[in-house]
Length: 225
Image (cartoon, rainbow, N blue to C red; front, side):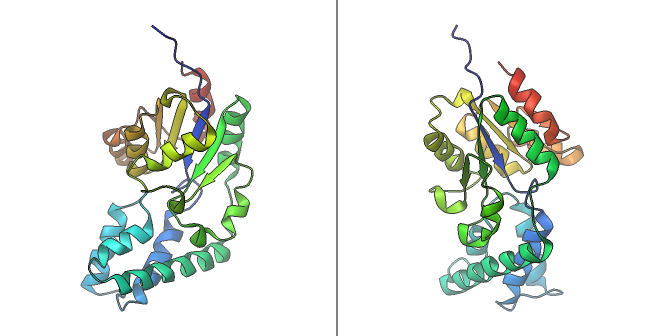
């Protein structure tokens, strides 16, 4: 039996790790408001439930699903989301948390290429992209044919990083859709971040490991053989 190769590529889903879900939720609600769907209405409640159940997916893809059959409204809502997210991100000064930067730095120190993945478009991210330049590779929703929960973002990262084998890949995500994408891509390590009920959802989605904190990632990458 051939020994498994060392991990050469670590893909980190930014949702709920770097990009706080409340920031995305606020921008999503503001986008809905531009289409007359406001707080206190049944349409708003249904839309936000749909959003909550789709954490990890591209928000613009969720908006297109909500306005299925009404492309002009879907496009208008998507553009409004992109503007709102950029504005909210600036107001709240989004940055990479120190523990995340430290963990990814240690993983890179072991020789792995670091790829940061977000299901936001490049237009949505705006200045946030500049904060991520320390990574070897940054992929946005625009960079793959399909977003999470499909495997395309992880496979795109493999192609761009030159990874030869899915056994060289580790994926870390705090959302079930991100974990499912890693599982579908065949990554050797699919680490979910969470505890309690979230941990159960991550395992159901295909996580090979569930971590309480991203600080445990470097040791997992270094010791998995």
